[in-house]
Amino acid sequence: MSDRSPSFYEAELERIYHELPFRQEQFAQLRQSKVFMEKHYGSKLVIDALADRAAMSRFHFIRVFKAMYGISPMTYLRDLRIAKAKFLLQKGFLVTDVCLEVGYESLPSFSTAFKKCTGYTPREYRSINIAI
Image 1 (cartoon, rainbow, N blue to C red):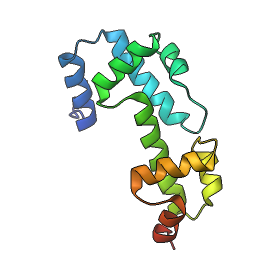
Image 2 (cartoon, rainbow, N blue to C red):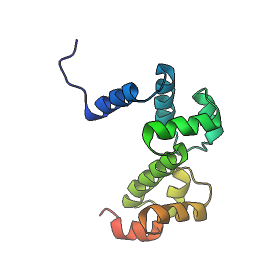
Image 3 (cartoon, one colour):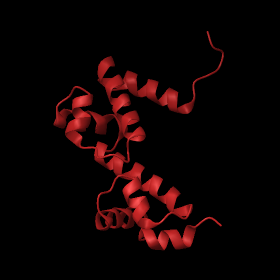
Image 4 (cartoon, helix red, strand yellow):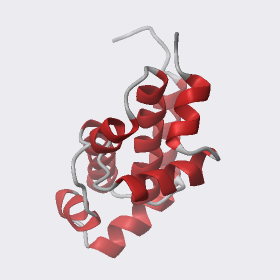
Protein backbone atom coordinates (compact mmCIF):
# COMPACT_ATOMS: atom_id res chain seq x y z
CA MET A 1 0.00 0.00 0.00
CA SER A 2 1.34 3.42 -0.97
CA ASP A 3 1.87 6.16 1.61
CA ARG A 4 1.53 9.03 -0.86
CA SER A 5 -1.65 11.05 -0.81
CA PRO A 6 -3.60 11.44 -4.06
CA SER A 7 -2.85 14.42 -6.28
CA PHE A 8 -5.47 17.12 -6.65
CA TYR A 9 -6.41 15.69 -10.05
CA GLU A 10 -6.80 12.17 -8.64
CA ALA A 11 -8.83 13.46 -5.70
CA GLU A 12 -11.13 15.42 -8.02
CA LEU A 13 -11.70 12.38 -10.21
CA GLU A 14 -12.58 10.33 -7.14
CA ARG A 15 -14.95 13.07 -5.94
CA ILE A 16 -16.64 13.27 -9.32
CA TYR A 17 -16.88 9.49 -9.50
CA HIS A 18 -18.72 9.37 -6.18
CA GLU A 19 -20.90 12.47 -6.65
CA LEU A 20 -22.14 12.07 -10.20
CA PRO A 21 -24.50 9.33 -11.30
CA PHE A 22 -22.04 7.55 -13.59
CA ARG A 23 -21.66 3.84 -13.74
CA GLN A 24 -18.08 2.69 -13.25
CA GLU A 25 -17.71 1.64 -16.89
CA GLN A 26 -19.04 5.02 -18.12
CA PHE A 27 -16.53 6.79 -15.91
CA ALA A 28 -13.69 4.72 -17.37
CA GLN A 29 -14.93 5.14 -20.95
CA LEU A 30 -15.10 8.91 -20.61
CA ARG A 31 -11.60 9.10 -19.14
CA GLN A 32 -10.32 6.90 -21.97
CA SER A 33 -11.98 9.06 -24.62
CA LYS A 34 -10.42 12.18 -23.08
CA VAL A 35 -6.98 10.52 -23.06
CA PHE A 36 -7.56 9.43 -26.67
CA MET A 37 -8.27 13.07 -27.64
CA GLU A 38 -5.10 14.19 -25.86
CA LYS A 39 -3.00 11.66 -27.77
CA HIS A 40 -4.63 12.09 -31.19
CA TYR A 41 -5.61 15.78 -31.18
CA GLY A 42 -3.80 16.26 -34.51
CA SER A 43 -5.90 13.64 -36.27
CA LYS A 44 -9.34 14.12 -37.71
CA LEU A 45 -11.61 13.32 -34.76
CA VAL A 46 -15.37 13.33 -35.12
CA ILE A 47 -17.88 13.11 -32.33
CA ASP A 48 -19.50 9.94 -33.69
CA ALA A 49 -16.20 8.05 -33.61
CA LEU A 50 -15.43 9.27 -30.09
CA ALA A 51 -18.89 8.22 -28.94
CA ASP A 52 -18.47 4.81 -30.57
CA ARG A 53 -15.15 4.33 -28.76
CA ALA A 54 -16.95 5.08 -25.49
CA ALA A 55 -19.78 2.67 -26.41
CA MET A 56 -22.38 5.43 -26.20
CA SER A 57 -24.70 7.18 -28.58
CA ARG A 58 -23.52 10.53 -29.88
CA PHE A 59 -25.97 12.53 -27.79
CA HIS A 60 -25.48 10.54 -24.60
CA PHE A 61 -21.69 10.85 -24.96
CA ILE A 62 -21.93 14.64 -25.33
CA ARG A 63 -24.30 14.92 -22.37
CA VAL A 64 -22.25 12.71 -20.04
CA PHE A 65 -18.89 14.23 -21.09
CA LYS A 66 -20.25 17.71 -20.41
CA ALA A 67 -21.62 16.63 -17.04
CA MET A 68 -18.27 15.16 -16.06
CA TYR A 69 -15.85 17.78 -17.44
CA GLY A 70 -18.00 20.90 -17.63
CA ILE A 71 -17.52 21.41 -21.39
CA SER A 72 -18.52 19.56 -24.52
CA PRO A 73 -16.07 17.11 -26.09
CA MET A 74 -15.58 19.29 -29.17
CA THR A 75 -14.94 22.38 -27.05
CA TYR A 76 -12.38 20.37 -25.08
CA LEU A 77 -10.73 19.23 -28.31
CA ARG A 78 -10.67 22.79 -29.69
CA ASP A 79 -9.12 24.14 -26.48
CA LEU A 80 -6.54 21.34 -26.50
CA ARG A 81 -5.61 22.08 -30.11
CA ILE A 82 -5.33 25.82 -29.46
CA ALA A 83 -3.08 25.21 -26.44
CA LYS A 84 -0.80 23.00 -28.56
CA ALA A 85 -0.85 25.60 -31.35
CA LYS A 86 0.17 28.36 -28.93
CA PHE A 87 3.12 26.26 -27.78
CA LEU A 88 4.26 25.57 -31.35
CA LEU A 89 3.85 29.19 -32.41
CA GLN A 90 5.98 30.30 -29.45
CA LYS A 91 8.67 27.92 -30.70
CA GLY A 92 8.66 29.73 -34.06
CA PHE A 93 6.85 27.22 -36.26
CA LEU A 94 5.09 28.59 -39.34
CA VAL A 95 1.36 29.19 -39.00
CA THR A 96 0.45 26.82 -41.85
CA ASP A 97 2.55 24.03 -40.35
CA VAL A 98 0.97 24.56 -36.93
CA CYS A 99 -2.50 24.55 -38.46
CA LEU A 100 -1.96 21.11 -39.99
CA GLU A 101 -0.04 19.76 -36.98
CA VAL A 102 -2.87 20.43 -34.53
CA GLY A 103 -5.57 18.89 -36.70
CA TYR A 104 -7.16 21.73 -38.64
CA GLU A 105 -7.72 21.09 -42.32
CA SER A 106 -7.89 24.73 -43.42
CA LEU A 107 -6.02 27.84 -42.44
CA PRO A 108 -9.15 30.04 -42.27
CA SER A 109 -10.93 27.72 -39.81
CA PHE A 110 -7.77 27.48 -37.70
CA SER A 111 -7.29 31.26 -37.71
CA THR A 112 -10.93 31.87 -36.76
CA ALA A 113 -10.82 29.39 -33.87
CA PHE A 114 -7.44 30.70 -32.69
CA LYS A 115 -8.58 34.32 -32.70
CA LYS A 116 -11.82 33.42 -30.92
CA CYS A 117 -9.86 31.72 -28.13
CA THR A 118 -6.89 34.07 -27.79
CA GLY A 119 -7.96 37.42 -29.22
CA TYR A 120 -5.03 37.30 -31.68
CA THR A 121 -4.55 35.87 -35.12
CA PRO A 122 -1.98 33.05 -35.16
CA ARG A 123 0.48 35.31 -36.98
CA GLU A 124 0.05 38.11 -34.41
CA TYR A 125 0.41 35.64 -31.54
CA ARG A 126 3.56 34.18 -33.07
CA SER A 127 5.20 37.56 -33.56
CA ILE A 128 4.35 38.71 -30.02
CA ASN A 129 5.29 35.49 -28.21
CA ILE A 130 8.07 33.89 -30.20
CA ALA A 131 10.73 32.42 -27.92
CA ILE A 132 14.17 33.78 -28.62
